Amino acid sequence: MIQDISPSRLNNSWQKTAPQPDSFMMCFCGGELLAAVSDGVPQFPRYRDLTETEKPPVYLFSVDDEAFFLTETAEAFGGYQPFSIRALRDQCAGKYLYAAFTAFHLHQWYADNRFCGICRGEMQHDDRERALVCKACGHKVYPRINPAVIVGVISRGRILITQYRRGYAHNALVAGFTEIGETLEECVRREVMEETGLRVKNIRYYKSQPWGMAQDILTGFFCEADGSDAIQMDDSELRSACWCKPDEITLQPQQHSLT
Image 1 (tube, rainbow, N blue to C red):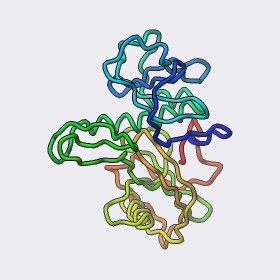
Image 2 (cartoon, helix red, strand yellow; image 1 turned 60 degrees about the vertical axis):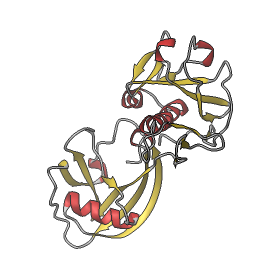
Image 3 (cartoon, rainbow, N blue to C red; image 1 turned 90 degrees about the vertical axis):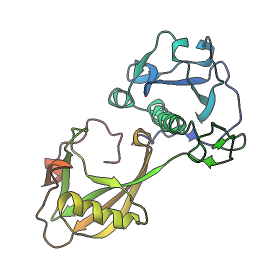
Image 4 (cartoon, one colour; image 1 turned 180 degrees about the vertical axis):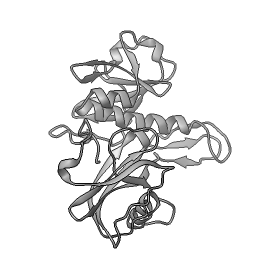
């Protein structure tokens, strides 16, 4: 999966630190990240490449001993081009792709919280932790993380395979966001029922995955069809849903996702 970068390690602890010449600059322009791709490895600008900036770069995290910072000065970098995170996912792998996903997650959070939701004052970076604080009223916000489930439903040696009505075109599993006041297990039951009309039992945890493209933490479960396994598909959400034996499944082209 995308986060499996061992023996490398992403350290997401907040630090009050300044960039060094070799620090990576993660620069987003219209939601796309400036990069160059060589042999499936994304390359990002370094701080030494930065010719000008209106605001100081913001520390994001480190991967091993390499620090990553966020900057808004796209025009200051030559030799790089904007890539959507989806395009990088389709072309790349490894620790730098995981860094791009995580940087996008934080970039999106910063962009969505420029102003206070209480008094409309300007938000500024807290100087003790990863948070944004309103200069006027003191309201504080932390990074947004959306909980979601992804479900492998099993029946008689087969697994339920779906395809979304819109967006992602490859095979997928039942998935969805957790609602207010809902446990993850309740979310599993609801999403499977809503998308396919199936009741499930014996819900068991499998693995989890951060997915920065949607600011998610995905929680994977297996479960079994309870009673009838006749599918009643919600065609507003899905364009197909069927039971498949393992040797009938076409796998996704990359091994990045929990699916």
